[in-house]
Length: 291
Image (cartoon, rainbow, N blue to C red):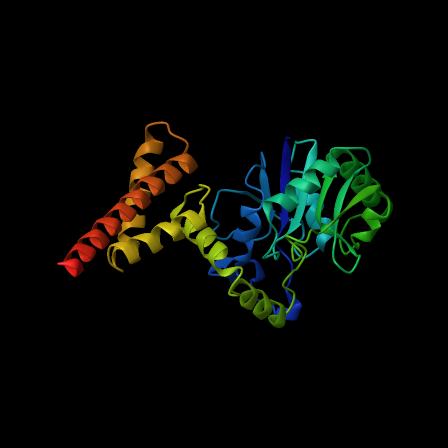
């Protein structure tokens, strides 16, 4: 499915004291980078806002004059796109994920003018949505003609004229529409990713982004391997073994193997070795005890 993404990152962040909100971090990753990670397959990604470092290349633009509000920013971003579908996102969504984006795009590819995420309170979020570009251009042009410009017009002036399919957040990603408007929101997001059920996945994603790699990681397999190495050999063997597994998998991938399969195969071999090592030590211990 061909789509472009427009990310609005130029708001004033008044409730945060005017700080550069997209650059604020959750889990040691900028909010903007977290949103960019949710839409890596966009043909063109346009960020409407001031230039700043990002984890991957994007196209920058700005509404004229700056500070004209989300509708004016959307108009500026839309001008830089050519795909039939346009994913529109705000830059402060720490928990937006790829499956949610895919669900929006799939729904927008049907009848109507697009699809919008509906939050747990039943409210539609027009800045977490996928639109048909033709419909967006038509309505934005009409609004600009009617009002003289798009400056300070509310988004509802646009969405009220569009037929949008609601996509409800799922149980797996109930916080996909959560945005960071206040310092309290930011603190809640940071606390959330450190919860027991989330911290490992969040950490693995952060490390992959930091190292510039994108490979599926079977966390359970690697943890099982680390456990076997620690218990069957010695505790320091756990991190060293997983490092060697990663190195072996990288070599296999460089030769054309599927990266995820290479990790799985290297993990299996190392785990089998650790179990054989432990079995040998147990056998020797039993012989010593019987002697």
